[in-house]
Image 1 (cartoon, rainbow, N blue to C red):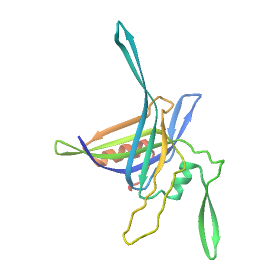
Image 2: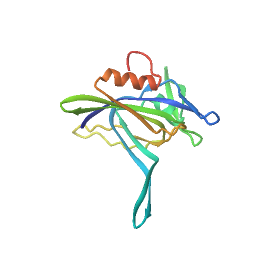
Image 3: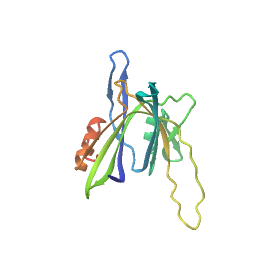
Image 4: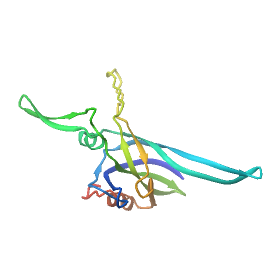
Length: 196
């Protein structure tokens, strides 16, 4: 099964209750347009040897790293993900939004979802993936001057993938309908409206 694209990144704040061991997602949002999404997992593996052979083997998810490269990271998404503050300031006759990062910012946890387009036996399928608990960190950035050729410079942000309070770190569906894949993610991440 070949993957040929990625689209519709979405996110919602994750609220977990340690006492009752329950969780819910707050109001979700669209996270721009996806260029590239990658993740690497840390898996603990242990083998028990008996009679000079492997008698048992155990593998367990520890955590992972998410890399998200969108066309743009809007200020409201940065504020959400990184606990940055947006304040209004007046410059001449214009009012602008100032995004402030401080050493007291405390990034929260989010559900982060997206859709991977695949082809299998000449049929297009849609794999909707939800990473149940992600914490983003301030991105490293690089810019360069414009030369004779246009070079696209797009942002990249990393997050840590963790287990949700119920033990789940990923949920997914694979369906033949893009509408169904989008609706499932939008439902899980509380995204309303027709623009999802």
